[in-house]
Length: 215
Image 1 (cartoon, helix red, strand yellow):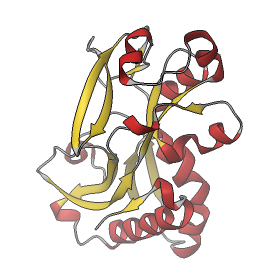
Image 2 (image 1 turned 135 degrees about the vertical axis):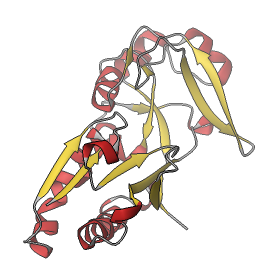
Image 3 (image 1 turned 180 degrees about the vertical axis):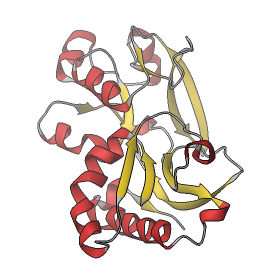
């Protein structure tokens, strides 16, 4: 038995579609996969490993860096028709941003971007804040505001014309993706097999422009 926890979008877009190849290679492993955008306590819940995207703040755990997801800025055609296409950062004062917060604690919606090697942020107006990646993209598709997401996550929506890239010169910094697991499970063959397999999935399945391997 291998118990893992993964972000909902990664489970839906990358893990589930490729799991048949995992079970072909490791037919004796049974998998329990939790899907959540919330940070869980591995030690308390008895989970073997988790996939995390973004900054890592858990010193009690071992981290295996896998790479980075470049991000992009997107809006639906309906949103652009209503609010116009932003051409510069100053234009964002007249625009809406879909807010994202795991805690839903009333914090401001913030547009993030990298400039001259530094990460910067700009507070924006927002009518809705969500705590789930699926809902975040759904709100963007519905025209409720601009969204900032990993590029791989919206490839199909871009191809279908359901989303349009905006302000490509002001993209947020790429998001780190890593596997975390407790120290005592460092030698687990099941964990190591899963980590190696998923690292290969990232390298093979994602377009090269949407994934930067870890150094």
